[in-house]
Image 1 (cartoon, rainbow over the protein chains, first blue to last red):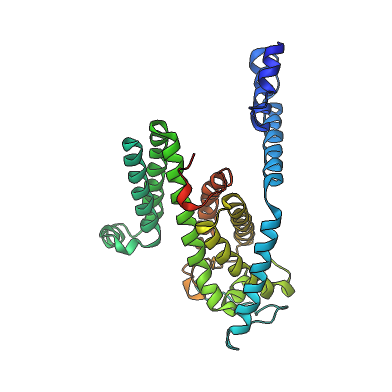
Image 2 (tube, one colour; image 1 turned 180 degrees about the vertical axis):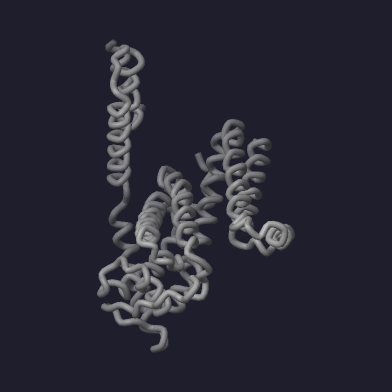
Length: 102
Length: 216
C-alpha cells in the first residue's frame, strides 16, 4: 500500500495524473464502488487544478507588456484612419434591421 | 521518422482540402453537379469537409506512434503557422475599417453599448499582434493562452447570438456583405470550438521559437 501511495504522489506525476490515480485506486484496486458522478468530480477537480497550475506558470509581465503594445497599436490605428472609418473611443453603432427573407 | 512524416503530410493535405471544401466549395468540380442533382443537399460541403478533417486528424495517431517527438514537433509547427495566418488574416479587414467592425459587434447586442467601439479597436489589434507573436515569438504558451481566451470570448458571443436567434453574420473574416443565412453563426461557433483543440495543445508546449520546434 505504501509503495502504491508513493507511486501516486511521486514528483513525476502532475496533479491531473495524481487525481486519476487516486480515483482509480478507489474504484478499481480496492473494489470500493464510488458512484460514477464521484469519479467525474475527481477528474474535474484534477482538471481545474491543472488549469490553475498552468495559469501560475504563465509569464504575466510579458502578457502585460504585449497588452500595452495592443493599446498603443489600437490608438495609432484609430488616429490614422480617415473620418468615415474612425470610431469614438466610447460609444456604439446603430442596430441594423434584418433584411427580408433572411 | 519517414513513415511519421508521410502520415503527417497526408494528414495536413487532407485537413487543408477539408478547409477549402468548407470555405471555397465552388473551387471543386462536384459543387455545381451536386447542387444541380440534389438541390436539397443543403450545405453538403460541411459534411465532406469535416469528414476530410476527421480522417486527417485520425492519421495523426499512427504518425505519433511511429515517431512521437517528430510528429508532435510537426503538429506544433503546423498549428502555429495555421493559427497565426488565420488570426492575422482575420484582423486585417477589422484594422482597415474599425467602424464596420464596430457595426458588426453592435449587432451581437452582447456588450454594454459604451464598450462596443473600444472592443472593436482593441480586439483586432490583439488578434494581429498575438498572431504575429505566435508565429515568430518564443513565448508559445503565453501567446496560445491569449488566443484561446479570445476564442472563448468568440464562442460565448456566438452562442449567445444563436440562443437569441439574432441571425447575424459572424464577422470573423469578412464584413457585413458576408452574411448568407442564419446558420453561419452556428457554423462559426462549431469552427471555433474545434479550433480550441490545437490551441490547448499549444498551451502545453514548451516556449521556443518556430524554428526550434524539434529541439530536445
